[in-house]
Length: 280
Image 1 (cartoon, rainbow, N blue to C red):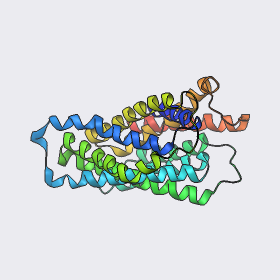
Image 2 (cartoon, rainbow, N blue to C red):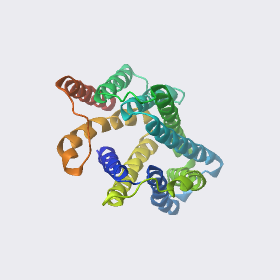
Image 3 (tube, rainbow, N blue to C red):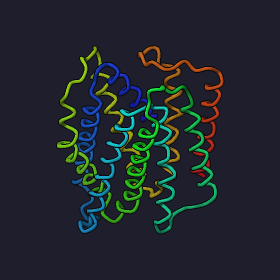
Image 4 (cartoon, rainbow, N blue to C red):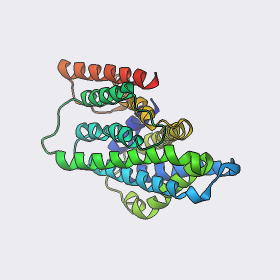
């Protein structure tokens, strides 16, 4: 729910002139700030020799963000977002390499239903000017990076120490953001409209909160695949929230005919079934 709300608020901010790279930079630095206090707790569980896994996870997370932004800049969201949903499959496959991984039939059915559901949720018209191959390529690259991040977090956080792993991981993301994102963030591409950074600031705070929730869930409970199945319900929450507030906040959405709406409802139902299978 938080991801859906954050994405809509950031979409409003960007549509009003906020620089998308600036949003990414502020988000990355903000995540580092909220995790730094963890360094004051749990020293007895730390293992510095294994902390390199946190640095690797941070580098992969940063690369995934770059892939996501390149995908969205290259083509349609209706192509990029379903391609990003392939993350779920990569997480499930990579998790099989971990000791004690869960690979029951119900989980694989959940993975399949989630993939189909996300594709149906994003059914709709596409612009003829989009570059589908490049868009999908960047999105799949991002999905692989994010998948590897989740699996490394699941395996590495218990060894490194939960209160050391996450600060090092997101510290790496923030450090990489200064030379690689800040120059783009400082460029003003369009004039700002009223409320652009009000929406952007609130969206960034909510986005950071939901990112923390996902990372903590994976680190504490060690089920990256199950977490990502549940996380895939963000498409459903986006649809629900937009249905109620799109006009009020000025989010322009394509007019949907009954067939497309029915497909999205079916996609929502499939994702709900997948969530139940992942949890039980």
